[in-house]
Image (cartoon, rainbow, N blue to C red; front, side, top):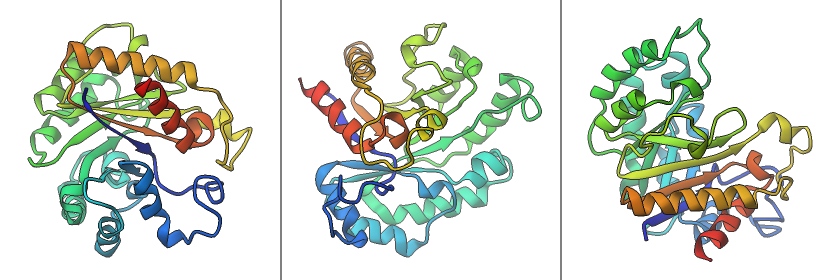
Length: 266
């Protein structure tokens, strides 16, 4: 079986106090408690800005050996500059995250949906992406997520594979899940898989904004993910899987993680 790294997108959220975290637990102790339950986390706050070096060193100090941090690459790179003239920004971010040492896991380029005012076609995006990927430094694991479903094709996957960047596989309201993509091609573009259970942010926030309980039963969906990933383990010899659950997927990300683990281990 592959190495399975599964956790939540961020380790704090409204409603986790008294549900996932014991009542009275100090926020300063949240990460240590989290790391005793799960073996990885996807940092969401790094999307908004590169963290302070002292913060990163604190994350490392509060987690046990073997724990891994995935992290979103700052939006100044993916959303504001969109991969152009951002070498210094990326260099600063990587040097800061290096303080995690062996606890540094994959780094995610998360792009939003691009309309035609930004890129008229997938070809225009690839023309920007290709030279950027060529300059990526070695020694890191990178994943990349797009939200233009028409761009998911063999040409895009092959470019990521050439540079050993994982295509982020997502379960999100307006994107097809891997088994729903019309054109069949190898979606695994690196030595590891990177899965994100994102859900329907708008839809679930109409029901709640406190993430203390399951709102949507995702058991059937998670069984489909388990089947898909098991098949990949057999057919493409997948060695490592990272998977992260967002609160918007079912209402309470820790419960999503535990449900998937129950399915996977059954």
